[in-house]
Image 1 (spheres, rainbow, N blue to C red):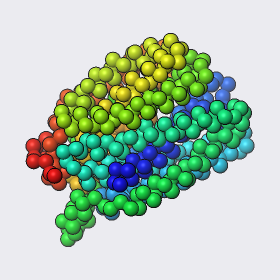
Image 2: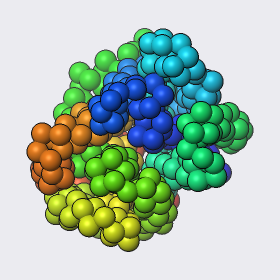
Image 3: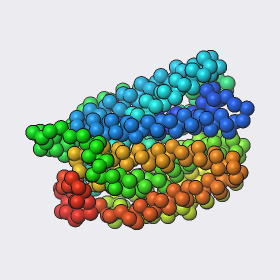
Image 4: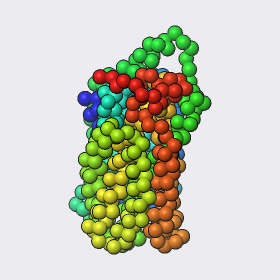
Length: 435
C-alpha cells in the first residue's frame, strides 16, 4: 500500500510535468510561441519548460522544510493538489491568437506552480517508502517512486499519441491536446485517495517525539549549513541521469520531427517503448544495488552514458524507425540504472530531522543545472554546429560529472537510517541490517 501510494502520486505529478514538455515540442511552439522559424518557436516553448525547473528549488526548500517539520504525508498531499490544479487550468488557457501576449505569460505562471509542486514531491515520496521499508532491500523499495517519471512520461506520451492519431492535426492543435491536460483532475483524485490512507513514517514520528521539548529549528537552514557537501555530491551524481533522460525522452521528439523530418509518431512510439522497458528495468537494477552497492551501479551507468551519447545520435541519424527505438531504449536503460539507486543513496546521506530538505534540495539542484537546460542546450548546439554529435559531446560531459561524483562517494548500502548523525557521521558505517 505504501509503495503503491508513493508510486501513484509520483506518476500523477510526473504525468502533469512531462505532459507540458511533450506538448512544448508538439503544440505550445505553435499556439503560444508562434515564429517563422520552427526551431525558434520550439526553443521558446522549451524555455517556459525550463521555468518549471527554476521553481523546483524553491518548492524543495519550502515543501522540504514543511515535510521535516509537519510530516512527509501532509506535504505530499499538498504538492499533489498544487500540481493537479495548475495542470488542469492549462487545459482551458486561450492561445496567443486569442488573447495575445497574456497567453504565454499565464502559461509561464502555471508552469511555475507546477515546478514548485514537483520540487517537494520526489523527496517525500522516496522517504515515505525508505523510512517505512526493510533496510536490506532499501534500494528496491526506494526505487518505486522512481517508476513515476517513466510511468508519467508513458502516460503523457501515450495520451497525446492517441489524441493526435485519432483526429486531424487542426483539431488536435485546436482542442484535442486540451483533453490530456483535463485528465489530470481524474488522476489527482486517484492519487489523493491512495495517499490519504498512508500513515506517517515511523522514523519521522520518532524524531518528532525526540525533539518535542526542544526549540523549533529550521531544517532547510541546517541542511544547507551542515550538509552542503552531501547535497552537492548527490546532485552531481544525477547529472548524467537527468540530462540524459531529457535528451533520450524529450529532445528526441524535436530531433526526429524537426531535424530529421520524420512523423511525430516515430519519436512518440520510441519513447513509449523505452518507458515500458524502463519500468521493467528499474526494479531489477534496484535489486542489484541492494546486493553489490550503490557505487558500482552509479559508475556503470555513468560510463554507459558517455559511450551511448554518441551511439544515440548515430542511430537517430539513420532515420530508421527501428533504429530510433533502439536508441531510445538504450538511453532509458541507462536512466533505469541511475534511477534504481538515487532514492536509497540520497536517503542514506542525511539524518531524519533534515532528510526531506536535504534530499529535495539535492534532487532539484541537479534538475535545474542538468535537466532544465538539456533541451535548450541541445537545440543551441545543433543550431551552432548542425550535428547531433555536438549534443552527444555535451551529454558525455554530463556523464563524466556523474562518474567523478560516484568515484568520490562513499558506499552507503549498510547505513541504518535511524543512526545517521547530525554531522552525517553514520554515512558508510557498517551496521547490522534491521529486520
